[in-house]
Length: 222
Image (cartoon, rainbow, N blue to C red; front, side, top):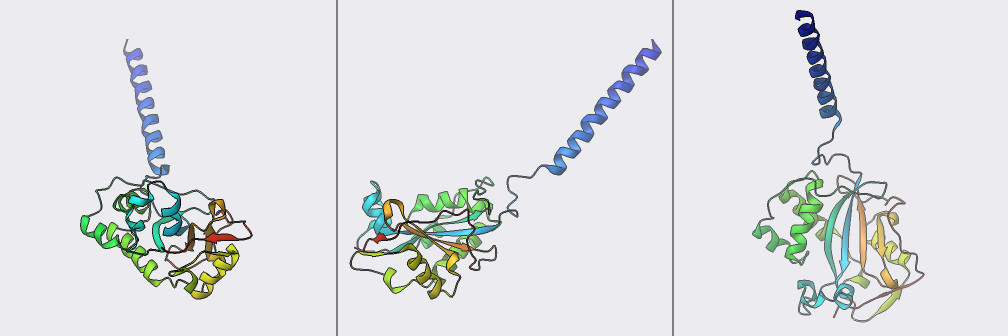
């Protein structure tokens, strides 16, 4: 009886040790969802408001479509990205962005729900605090030199995507590969800017979608 008890006790101890080692190994190698140090670069996406307002059914009710504001390029988001074309998202639970911050960002990022969404989905993966994240967006937007053709064009035009990218690169003393035009239905809808993790212009990876149209239409600012 004592022999049987000793055998059962030994088996129990071995089993417990096995669980302990397995648990230690798992905890050591599992990456927490909030680990934001592994992304490769940032993508700053600037939407062309005239295109959004003309083609989106809900555009007329959007703050960026107010004709009195005469908006051109507005911030859609600042997104941590991987070089392989994927991205982290929803990296941590977070409280809503403070109303004072939302109101401050509205002139360049005109959408209260958009601001909340971008912080929760992308900002939480940036490794930045909420204040630093939106401060970075504001600094990047205000520091971007917009070519004259895209400040407040009063008439429609056509241009080659590569020419648009080069215009932005030249104006900002950046590599042409740092800018990518988005062109659904061969119409200018956004310009995307690739940035290093310290927010310097850098060439975009080959995995980032390109506009292959020979020429695209650019809507005027109403």
